[in-house]
Length: 383
Image (cartoon, rainbow, N blue to C red; front, side, top):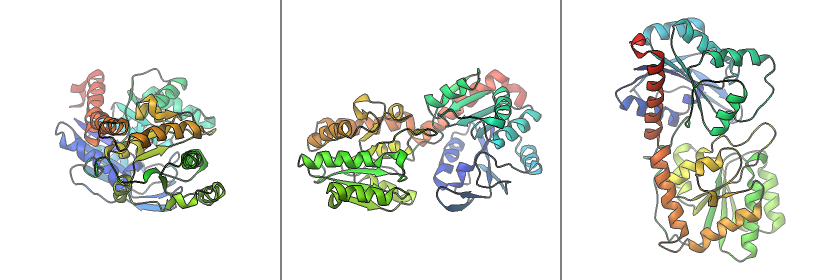
């Protein structure tokens, strides 16, 4: 089975691990199409594609409208050379259905009479405007849609897609990099943490308020906030105003290779995201990274967080600092017990990652989907 994967997310080194895991399965030969460079506005950083693995074919090109995820396009001559050289049997597009590159690659795949799988995260309805016609074309051409969450599946149905669907994250977690540290009991103080962008929708102010509730009850707890963003100064002011600044440590954004060390400093990771008009949590990759490090995770009911965590007792209503504090209190009280609640949640997270969210598991699930598509489309036709 020969599958060509297209996506600008593979500019990031850790994401290429999925394609390496796919290639290790032997039953699939993988090729990648990606931009030569990519300007990520939200991170204020320009990526240059570098191959971190040699187990799959890699094709890169300059793109039109670099850095604009919904508008960038590949040169037609480049795509023709790749398709003629690699001779794929299936085209796997990791791009939202409203992106122009999704339309471009879908048309190109159909010209080669190839089945199309599209992956998307989008879980919030928005006016499509002039893109409605391109979305309709992509929906008609694709053989399978993979949504990063059930919310993405619900949205694609709302937009009119009636074909087969599957729920699967775009990437798993590298369990060789994200491994557990010391087992409980951990020394005091109890350390809660957050990692991500410091923006209003991430709800870090709710976590700070929960910390204030717990400090008022004389719990020995501190908070590590890892990340940068426009809300950083306001969050620091909020801590000072509540009188808990000495119990909060702000850390800069870390390189991905440094994140496991940060995770292993924590007793719990919190993801208190809140919905805003054009966004709600699409997955929360830090959830599975923390779980893989043996760190319990507590999250709000924003977007996909509940289905990623998978336990109602670890979920609290958006914006409800008291409810978050209540869950954290239960974890604090049990954190020194060898057979207590904290340890049970820790074990649950480790098992959940291995069963559903390791990079190897996600690779196997991708192959199963591709086999299903090729079987329905007529596998022999593409041999």
